[in-house]
Length: 45
Image (cartoon, rainbow, N blue to C red; front, side):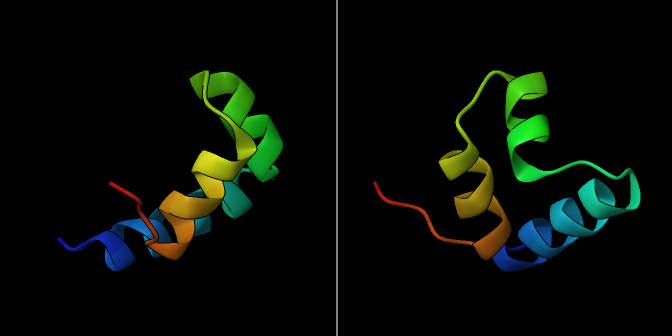
């Protein structure tokens, strides 16, 4: 599975559960920006 597919899946599940990116980020212990990058398939190495 590529990063874009994973990101779309993550965003879909997050929205189905009624969570904002900020809420998901808090639950996972990461920043909202990280969740946004995951969902858009953007990564910076």
